[in-house]
Image 1 (cartoon, rainbow, N blue to C red):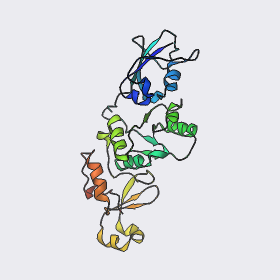
Image 2 (cartoon, one colour):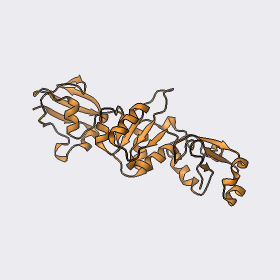
Image 3 (tube, rainbow, N blue to C red):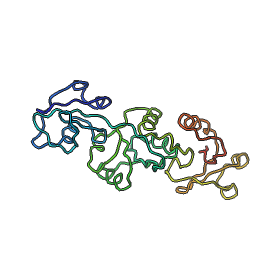
Image 4 (tube, helix red, strand yellow):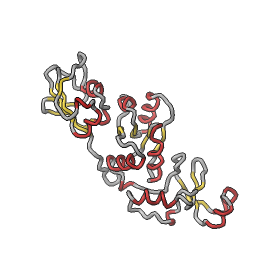
Length: 248
């Protein structure tokens, strides 16, 4: 039987008795490295390098009974200057993370209750990175890039994703709608006065308008809380001159 050894954070995805050690695992005839690795619970999106008997091999490698595999995780991204900002598709269980990524300015679609096959095709067609806590979705052959999100709370998930994909340099806070993901644009008070609560219309002077759903934003009561979230990640000023702060 082939021998396997998974390294670093990939051990999080294995059964406890298989972690941090070399073990034998029976494989079907003509199984590939991908099939065997995913049968052990590790989606291909999590795999960076595979060594077979110490030599680099692809996930399509046909396993032999005498093979010894070392499987390493994907490395954290380091985007080069000028690279386009990554675009994400978050599964239905990561709604809080999707809103936080939008707050930082990243194009993030939130998946609804669609079959994995539909979500995989959507991500592939749009060139999106899938963020999920559903391993079966990440195993789909049409999912080229993804991340199994380990963290449980929204704030920890955001830190994990920002670090893994090297997002800090691409942050453009308060530039996307938290509800629908469309871009925001400055709005004149006179154009939206009829849609504002009287107190807001009287006290606020700066507004932004969602170019998708039409939602109006202003520096409202929870703006300071959102500003604190942004300040942890961004060197971009978050004062009201940005003219794109979600309001109440």
